[in-house]
Length: 396
Image 1: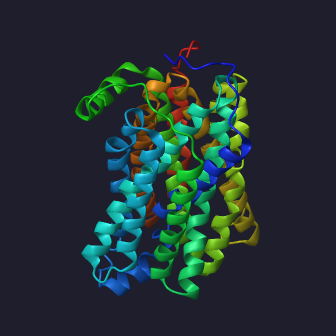
Image 2: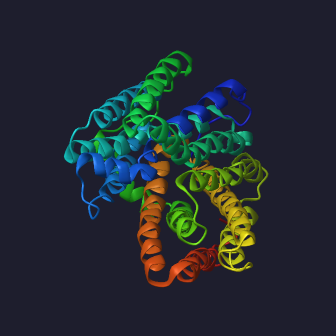
Image 3: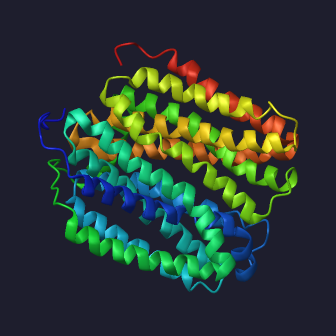
């Protein structure tokens, strides 16, 4: 268990804000390519059948990084680890910028995924800085930056690519990452982990942590269901908006921006957790995700009202996802500083796989049954989480 003081001074507000901005700017690298799959594939000679690899390679890299790189936060000095990873992000972005053929870009996409997991070293780092009594609030504030980065990345990439080119998206981000690394190297405090181990032993401990930590299994599987629903919604709605509402790429980008409103729940969720309302907050988060899909059937398909309802559903969905994510991290970060990075890596890896499954199932459901089938899938996933939640012992 953690030996951290309950009465330690909280981190200064500027440091929490800096980590929130750093997380948002860095995690955005995972999502820039998603709206640009068409133009990237066309310019690099990648067939339509293989264009999906652009997103898949980034996701695969991210899961590998979560399992192989993030645990190092429990072993190596954190500030140095963050700076080295940001340098790797810069290299991967430059490789993407100057890619002239498909294989080169796909390697860059994999490396972007592996190196961008630095955000999952930054989040436990923020938790280490906060005293127990306000850890949820600090983590919530940092996670709001991360969620904003996820939601803003796609519209920003579309906008830059429209006005300059897709190459410029990765080039500009590389410049931003260099500046960010310089600022963090100067401003972040040192943090030397207490855990003493070899790297192979550290990786081997992941399985023991999974088996021996029931809260980890619960929180990871809860969020895997919800994140799968999130992926169903954000994979399918661009297709729905183009086909049923005849929105342009810019219109779809504006729709994605609306979802940002839901991410503002993250700091509130952290305060809920600090006040001891993890169980009630979890129940509310799962219900919000289910309600988001149900409400999309309140208006006639293709109508202006239906479009408005879809926007509100996106906000409600993102509010549920942000809330549950922060509640899960707050629960796991209370289990001890010496294993915080490994718990976070496992938590993220499991629910990220849920998200990947949701994307593929969502696309299949929409192709075979349109929005009715896709939304039924999205509605069912939080119900699975609720059924599992009903088995949770009160003591947890």
